[in-house]
Length: 254
Image (cartoon, rainbow, N blue to C red; front, side):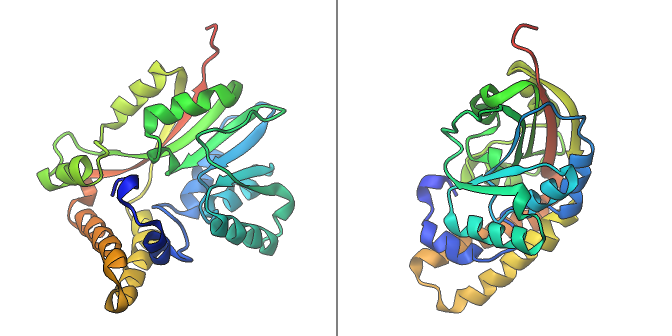
């Protein structure tokens, strides 16, 4: 659903205390984090962190402080508690703010991590929005959904172009967009299909089924959209997937 059609109370009822807010896995976050070249000096921002599963992995893997940013207070509270439980509270700072108008960090930003969240502004707009925050040579890691085939099923194309209103392109197209907007592409990593199911769609489907009998009209609409999304993935999920793009800011003078 487009953002302006979402009943957010109903959305958060469905998503209450799910392990994560999008497809992913701790193993994949760690794999991509370990693939990064040495970082320049500066802050690490996790944008649209949600409940922060990837934030914990980043802090533990990179052994660096991470500023986790989200607009939903309940997610940040869950992350703060999880960081404390994991002994990582000294490495994780939470901030309730929008990533559309981020202030400059005093030491600059060495790494922006946007796991699934660049979907909100859109890939190109997200790159343009966040690039000025990065120090020279700073990195931006963003995962976004792309076509994995040149001939996707018609119903999958209709879903992304009409229902979601987020027309997909190929990995090569995304790489070309990043290069056109001042980034070098250091690598791409495909999120395994299993990472869509185990910690995202499986618990989401179970919660939707549990809520369905007592759902009022607003929640029922959210459940319908959610169940339709999962159904499309079950039947067409081989044709699209999430790709992590590891990007380096190119010097403006280069």
